[in-house]
Image (tube, rainbow, N blue to C red):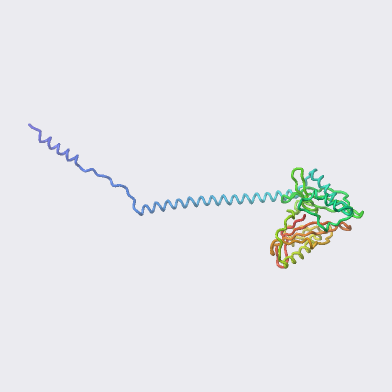
Length: 315
Protein backbone atom coordinates (compact mmCIF):
# COMPACT_ATOMS: atom_id res chain seq x y z
CA UNK A 1 0.00 0.00 0.00
CA UNK A 2 1.45 3.37 -1.09
CA UNK A 3 1.31 6.62 1.18
CA UNK A 4 2.73 9.32 -1.18
CA UNK A 5 -0.49 11.38 -1.61
CA UNK A 6 -0.72 11.92 2.11
CA UNK A 7 2.75 13.48 2.32
CA UNK A 8 1.83 15.89 -0.45
CA UNK A 9 -1.18 17.11 1.41
CA UNK A 10 0.87 17.78 4.56
CA UNK A 11 3.47 19.71 2.62
CA UNK A 12 0.86 22.00 1.05
CA UNK A 13 -0.69 22.62 4.50
CA UNK A 14 2.63 23.64 5.99
CA UNK A 15 3.28 25.94 3.08
CA UNK A 16 -0.06 27.72 3.51
CA UNK A 17 0.59 28.02 7.21
CA UNK A 18 3.92 29.69 6.62
CA UNK A 19 2.48 32.11 4.10
CA UNK A 20 -0.15 33.41 6.59
CA UNK A 21 0.30 37.27 6.97
CA UNK A 22 1.67 38.63 10.26
CA UNK A 23 -0.54 41.15 12.07
CA UNK A 24 1.26 44.38 13.22
CA UNK A 25 -0.18 46.11 16.29
CA UNK A 26 -1.26 49.71 15.82
CA UNK A 27 1.07 52.46 17.22
CA UNK A 28 -0.29 54.37 20.28
CA UNK A 29 -1.08 57.97 19.25
CA UNK A 30 -2.39 61.07 21.11
CA UNK A 31 -5.05 63.27 19.73
CA UNK A 32 -5.05 67.12 20.18
CA UNK A 33 -7.50 67.02 23.08
CA UNK A 34 -5.23 64.70 25.08
CA UNK A 35 -2.18 66.91 24.40
CA UNK A 36 -4.09 69.97 25.64
CA UNK A 37 -5.09 68.14 28.82
CA UNK A 38 -1.48 67.14 29.56
CA UNK A 39 -0.19 70.69 28.98
CA UNK A 40 -2.95 72.07 31.19
CA UNK A 41 -2.02 69.66 33.99
CA UNK A 42 1.64 70.70 33.71
CA UNK A 43 0.71 74.38 33.88
CA UNK A 44 -1.52 73.79 36.90
CA UNK A 45 1.32 71.94 38.59
CA UNK A 46 3.76 74.77 37.90
CA UNK A 47 1.23 77.33 39.19
CA UNK A 48 0.77 75.39 42.42
CA UNK A 49 4.53 75.02 42.84
CA UNK A 50 5.34 78.69 42.29
CA UNK A 51 2.42 79.73 44.52
CA UNK A 52 3.90 77.56 47.26
CA UNK A 53 7.34 79.11 46.72
CA UNK A 54 5.80 82.62 46.86
CA UNK A 55 3.99 81.78 50.10
CA UNK A 56 7.25 80.53 51.61
CA UNK A 57 9.06 83.71 50.48
CA UNK A 58 6.37 85.94 51.98
CA UNK A 59 6.44 83.95 55.20
CA UNK A 60 10.23 84.32 55.37
CA UNK A 61 10.03 88.07 54.69
CA UNK A 62 7.36 88.47 57.38
CA UNK A 63 9.48 86.47 59.81
CA UNK A 64 12.53 88.64 59.05
CA UNK A 65 10.47 91.80 59.56
CA UNK A 66 9.18 90.46 62.86
CA UNK A 67 12.73 89.63 63.95
CA UNK A 68 13.92 93.14 63.01
CA UNK A 69 11.09 94.68 65.02
CA UNK A 70 11.97 92.43 67.95
CA UNK A 71 15.62 93.47 67.77
CA UNK A 72 14.63 97.15 67.59
CA UNK A 73 12.34 96.71 70.61
CA UNK A 74 15.08 94.95 72.58
CA UNK A 75 17.58 97.69 71.70
CA UNK A 76 15.08 100.31 72.87
CA UNK A 77 14.57 98.44 76.13
CA UNK A 78 18.33 98.14 76.60
CA UNK A 79 18.70 101.90 76.06
CA UNK A 80 15.92 102.56 78.56
CA UNK A 81 17.55 100.27 81.09
CA UNK A 82 20.93 101.89 80.50
CA UNK A 83 19.34 105.31 80.94
CA UNK A 84 18.71 104.50 84.58
CA UNK A 85 21.82 102.49 85.34
CA UNK A 86 24.38 104.31 87.46
CA UNK A 87 27.98 103.42 86.76
CA UNK A 88 31.33 104.75 87.88
CA UNK A 89 34.32 105.35 85.66
CA UNK A 90 37.34 106.93 87.38
CA UNK A 91 38.78 108.14 84.07
CA UNK A 92 35.54 109.97 83.16
CA UNK A 93 35.21 111.39 86.68
CA UNK A 94 38.77 112.72 86.64
CA UNK A 95 38.33 114.25 83.19
CA UNK A 96 34.97 115.86 83.99
CA UNK A 97 36.17 117.21 87.35
CA UNK A 98 39.00 119.03 85.58
CA UNK A 99 36.64 120.30 82.91
CA UNK A 100 34.14 121.61 85.47
CA UNK A 101 36.88 123.44 87.37
CA UNK A 102 37.77 125.34 84.20
CA UNK A 103 34.18 125.87 83.05
CA UNK A 104 32.94 127.16 86.41
CA UNK A 105 36.00 129.24 87.20
CA UNK A 106 36.32 133.04 87.41
CA UNK A 107 36.10 134.61 83.96
CA UNK A 108 36.61 138.23 84.99
CA UNK A 109 40.40 137.99 85.02
CA UNK A 110 41.33 136.48 81.68
CA UNK A 111 38.41 135.16 79.63
CA UNK A 112 40.68 134.36 76.68
CA UNK A 113 42.79 132.08 78.82
CA UNK A 114 39.65 130.30 80.03
CA UNK A 115 38.47 129.84 76.44
CA UNK A 116 41.85 128.39 75.43
CA UNK A 117 41.72 125.96 78.32
CA UNK A 118 38.18 124.86 77.52
CA UNK A 119 39.09 124.28 73.88
CA UNK A 120 41.16 121.29 75.02
CA UNK A 121 37.99 119.63 76.34
CA UNK A 122 35.30 120.72 73.86
CA UNK A 123 34.55 119.13 70.50
CA UNK A 124 36.08 120.99 67.55
CA UNK A 125 32.69 122.25 66.31
CA UNK A 126 31.51 123.34 69.76
CA UNK A 127 32.12 126.96 70.81
CA UNK A 128 31.22 129.00 73.86
CA UNK A 129 28.18 131.29 73.42
CA UNK A 130 28.90 135.01 73.46
CA UNK A 131 26.30 135.33 76.23
CA UNK A 132 28.45 133.29 78.64
CA UNK A 133 29.35 136.27 80.84
CA UNK A 134 29.61 134.76 84.32
CA UNK A 135 32.02 136.57 86.62
CA UNK A 136 33.50 135.79 90.02
CA UNK A 137 32.62 132.09 89.80
CA UNK A 138 34.28 129.46 91.92
CA UNK A 139 33.50 125.76 91.86
CA UNK A 140 33.11 124.57 95.44
CA UNK A 141 32.45 120.88 94.83
CA UNK A 142 31.30 118.46 92.14
CA UNK A 143 29.75 115.06 92.79
CA UNK A 144 29.21 112.49 90.04
CA UNK A 145 25.66 111.13 90.15
CA UNK A 146 26.19 108.63 87.37
CA UNK A 147 27.09 107.95 83.77
CA UNK A 148 24.16 107.25 81.48
CA UNK A 149 23.64 106.18 77.88
CA UNK A 150 20.57 107.30 75.96
CA UNK A 151 20.42 106.52 72.22
CA UNK A 152 24.19 105.89 72.23
CA UNK A 153 24.95 109.37 73.69
CA UNK A 154 27.02 109.13 76.88
CA UNK A 155 26.08 111.69 79.53
CA UNK A 156 27.69 112.36 82.90
CA UNK A 157 25.54 114.00 85.57
CA UNK A 158 27.02 116.10 88.39
CA UNK A 159 25.72 117.85 91.48
CA UNK A 160 27.60 121.13 91.77
CA UNK A 161 28.18 123.68 94.50
CA UNK A 162 29.22 126.96 92.91
CA UNK A 163 30.17 130.13 94.73
CA UNK A 164 29.04 133.40 93.13
CA UNK A 165 29.98 136.68 94.79
CA UNK A 166 30.73 134.77 98.01
CA UNK A 167 27.33 133.09 97.99
CA UNK A 168 26.97 129.35 97.38
CA UNK A 169 24.42 127.82 95.02
CA UNK A 170 23.60 124.20 94.16
CA UNK A 171 22.57 122.86 90.77
CA UNK A 172 22.54 119.60 88.81
CA UNK A 173 24.01 119.52 85.30
CA UNK A 174 24.36 116.96 82.51
CA UNK A 175 27.48 116.84 80.35
CA UNK A 176 27.30 114.96 77.00
CA UNK A 177 30.57 113.36 75.92
CA UNK A 178 32.21 110.77 73.69
CA UNK A 179 34.96 108.33 74.59
CA UNK A 180 37.48 106.39 72.52
CA UNK A 181 39.56 104.23 74.86
CA UNK A 182 41.33 106.74 77.14
CA UNK A 183 40.44 109.76 74.98
CA UNK A 184 37.38 111.83 75.94
CA UNK A 185 35.64 114.86 74.41
CA UNK A 186 32.82 117.04 75.71
CA UNK A 187 30.27 117.19 72.88
CA UNK A 188 27.75 119.55 74.47
CA UNK A 189 27.76 122.37 77.01
CA UNK A 190 26.64 121.47 80.55
CA UNK A 191 22.92 122.01 80.94
CA UNK A 192 20.66 122.12 83.98
CA UNK A 193 18.67 118.92 84.50
CA UNK A 194 16.66 117.00 87.02
CA UNK A 195 18.38 113.98 88.60
CA UNK A 196 18.20 111.22 86.00
CA UNK A 197 16.25 108.07 86.75
CA UNK A 198 15.12 105.09 84.66
CA UNK A 199 12.63 107.18 82.67
CA UNK A 200 14.54 110.44 82.38
CA UNK A 201 14.94 112.05 78.98
CA UNK A 202 18.47 113.00 77.96
CA UNK A 203 19.48 114.75 74.74
CA UNK A 204 19.63 112.21 71.93
CA UNK A 205 22.13 113.88 69.61
CA UNK A 206 24.45 116.82 69.38
CA UNK A 207 23.60 120.19 67.81
CA UNK A 208 26.37 120.41 65.23
CA UNK A 209 24.11 120.52 62.15
CA UNK A 210 20.97 122.63 61.81
CA UNK A 211 20.10 121.78 58.21
CA UNK A 212 19.05 124.23 55.48
CA UNK A 213 17.67 127.49 56.87
CA UNK A 214 13.93 127.95 56.37
CA UNK A 215 13.26 131.09 54.34
CA UNK A 216 9.62 131.56 55.30
CA UNK A 217 9.50 134.73 57.41
CA UNK A 218 5.96 133.96 58.56
CA UNK A 219 6.97 130.50 59.83
CA UNK A 220 10.19 131.77 61.38
CA UNK A 221 8.29 134.43 63.34
CA UNK A 222 5.78 131.87 64.66
CA UNK A 223 8.52 129.37 65.55
CA UNK A 224 10.57 132.02 67.35
CA UNK A 225 7.57 133.05 69.45
CA UNK A 226 6.74 129.43 70.28
CA UNK A 227 10.37 128.64 71.20
CA UNK A 228 10.51 131.46 73.75
CA UNK A 229 7.20 130.41 75.28
CA UNK A 230 8.27 126.77 75.37
CA UNK A 231 11.63 127.54 77.02
CA UNK A 232 9.97 129.55 79.77
CA UNK A 233 7.36 126.83 80.28
CA UNK A 234 10.02 124.09 80.35
CA UNK A 235 12.05 125.83 83.08
CA UNK A 236 9.09 126.62 85.33
CA UNK A 237 6.76 123.60 84.87
CA UNK A 238 6.81 120.04 86.23
CA UNK A 239 7.19 117.15 83.80
CA UNK A 240 3.51 116.16 83.87
CA UNK A 241 2.43 119.62 82.68
CA UNK A 242 4.78 119.41 79.68
CA UNK A 243 2.85 116.42 78.28
CA UNK A 244 0.57 118.89 76.49
CA UNK A 245 3.52 120.29 74.57
CA UNK A 246 5.91 117.34 74.08
CA UNK A 247 6.05 113.73 72.96
CA UNK A 248 8.54 112.88 75.72
CA UNK A 249 7.61 115.39 78.44
CA UNK A 250 10.28 116.82 80.73
CA UNK A 251 10.30 119.95 82.90
CA UNK A 252 12.64 121.54 85.44
CA UNK A 253 9.79 122.51 87.78
CA UNK A 254 11.46 125.80 88.74
CA UNK A 255 14.88 124.28 89.54
CA UNK A 256 16.33 127.51 88.10
CA UNK A 257 14.89 130.82 86.92
CA UNK A 258 14.33 131.50 83.24
CA UNK A 259 16.22 134.55 81.96
CA UNK A 260 15.91 134.68 78.17
CA UNK A 261 16.29 133.08 74.76
CA UNK A 262 18.87 134.96 72.69
CA UNK A 263 17.21 136.10 69.43
CA UNK A 264 20.54 136.21 67.60
CA UNK A 265 21.07 132.48 68.19
CA UNK A 266 17.70 131.29 66.88
CA UNK A 267 18.05 129.26 63.67
CA UNK A 268 15.03 127.68 61.97
CA UNK A 269 15.38 124.82 59.48
CA UNK A 270 13.19 121.98 58.24
CA UNK A 271 9.81 122.68 56.61
CA UNK A 272 6.84 124.89 57.42
CA UNK A 273 4.89 121.93 58.82
CA UNK A 274 7.87 120.33 60.57
CA UNK A 275 10.35 123.07 61.50
CA UNK A 276 13.54 122.48 63.49
CA UNK A 277 14.71 125.32 65.72
CA UNK A 278 18.05 125.70 67.50
CA UNK A 279 18.61 128.44 70.10
CA UNK A 280 20.62 129.45 73.15
CA UNK A 281 18.75 129.75 76.45
CA UNK A 282 19.97 131.42 79.63
CA UNK A 283 18.81 130.44 83.10
CA UNK A 284 19.74 131.72 86.55
CA UNK A 285 20.31 129.93 89.82
CA UNK A 286 17.84 130.96 92.52
CA UNK A 287 18.84 133.94 94.69
CA UNK A 288 22.26 134.33 93.07
CA UNK A 289 24.03 136.12 90.25
CA UNK A 290 25.03 132.87 88.58
CA UNK A 291 23.66 132.34 85.07
CA UNK A 292 23.82 129.16 83.00
CA UNK A 293 23.89 129.28 79.19
CA UNK A 294 22.74 126.16 77.35
CA UNK A 295 21.81 125.22 73.80
CA UNK A 296 18.46 123.69 72.92
CA UNK A 297 16.98 122.17 69.78
CA UNK A 298 13.29 121.57 69.15
CA UNK A 299 11.85 119.30 66.47
CA UNK A 300 8.36 120.69 65.91
CA UNK A 301 5.15 119.53 64.25
CA UNK A 302 2.52 122.04 63.22
CA UNK A 303 -0.65 121.65 65.26
CA UNK A 304 -3.48 124.04 64.37
CA UNK A 305 -2.14 127.55 65.02
CA UNK A 306 0.74 126.40 67.24
CA UNK A 307 3.36 123.63 67.40
CA UNK A 308 4.01 120.37 69.23
CA UNK A 309 7.53 119.28 70.25
CA UNK A 310 8.25 115.80 68.88
CA UNK A 311 11.88 115.83 70.04
CA UNK A 312 13.76 118.02 72.53
CA UNK A 313 17.56 118.05 72.79
CA UNK A 314 19.91 120.03 75.01
CA UNK A 315 23.66 120.41 74.73
